[in-house]
Image 1 (cartoon, rainbow, N blue to C red):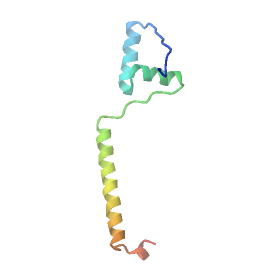
Image 2: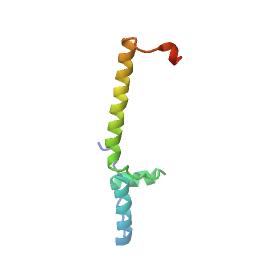
Image 3: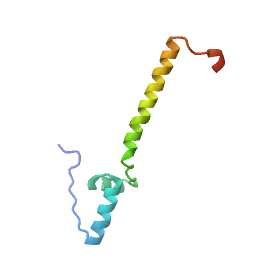
Image 4: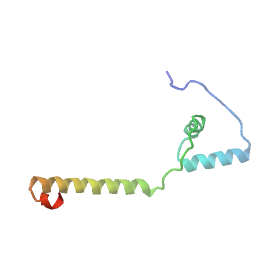
Length: 85
């Protein structure tokens, strides 16, 4: 059974529909999700720029490499612990 089983339909004029569609597209959400945000008192945020996800993948990879280097240095006892204390 559907989680959401109440259907609501409403009408907009052309100007309202264009403004609504522009805001939905800017948020990156579906029309339904956008309206649910508004109904629940949340302000839909703008979608991040397209290169955001590529940048986050790159940053995650850098963090992973740093962790691997730190683990290897610790295993080889290559750290000067007294210096870092």
